[in-house]
Image (cartoon, rainbow, N blue to C red):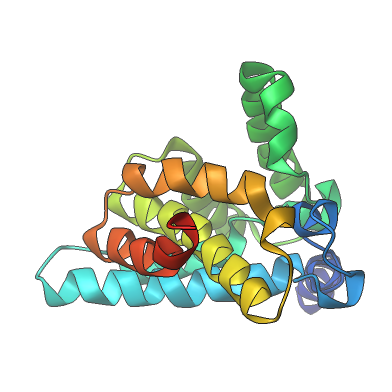
Length: 198
């Protein structure tokens, strides 16, 4: 089993070198672009904080599921690569169906290296994430989008030109109204307040 886990981890290791293409497209220098692994770490941290905040309000949230889901939500990209979501505007329905199938099959390929028990557990959690029905899936999904707003804010603080991110701002202005979690909504408002007023 140790050889299989080693092989699985070597595949996942690619995420440390895989750049997030949306930032590349926006003109951020390659040396400053976050990797998919950077992104997944922050999504996991945000999802954990949101889940703990919900638990403090006595909401029933499975923290283990949240953390596993956040860690694997982009794992498939270690073999399928990061696809900039802005291309979806050219064929929204086809892109959504394609991306969902691509992610599911790529993850299944990766999980083949693990024990049947691990495969079953991780596949079920990823399926839950794709279906977006559970409170845990909604937390991770909103943490995923919120992390991108945090990263955008950091690039602006580092002196990147706001004009390069006009599509991001347009998307986030719409998205922040769709967030369901009150904490996520407030964090997004605080992060975007200064920028959307410009």
